[in-house]
Figure (cartoon, one colour):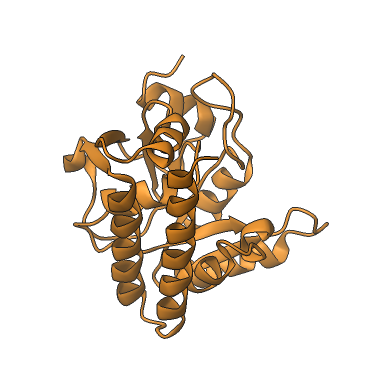
Length: 227
């Protein structure tokens, strides 16, 4: 690990906890949205990574949705927050227990607006109850249906069934987005050397009706022409 990478990670830790404290001071969803956006911009600016949004015209400006995205790297949520900058959509992130307890991300995740997913629990009723409560209060739900980061060469790994259940139970239209290329490689390059600007593209897909009975992964692949 070179000095530049150590410096980048140290500053990232500072930003994450600094914004975590600020997020803890407010319960207002739109204030949280603004803080999450400011955090996302600060982190990506430090890495000199620019986000390009394809088909931004397909983004609704208001409403409640189940946003689904592929997942390759820890900066994927930041990319999505920037894509949603000019909307009033605020979502609760479905977050694993490991993130809640993380030294690096814990303070931020617990206060930014998220729902804990503990796969070690035998019953998921509490998780779905938290989802229902969040939707009732006006929030969207943001989720990575692959369940964990894709570290393979394939463009997508298998979706977990829970995403479809969330959409059906809460009558949420599904907003698909796709982060093109290998964002993990871009991140690693930026951590080593941020002197050159790099770009990550996120594509906005056509909305999917929650009543659509077609397998969600199949529809997602079709939306983004994934083999």
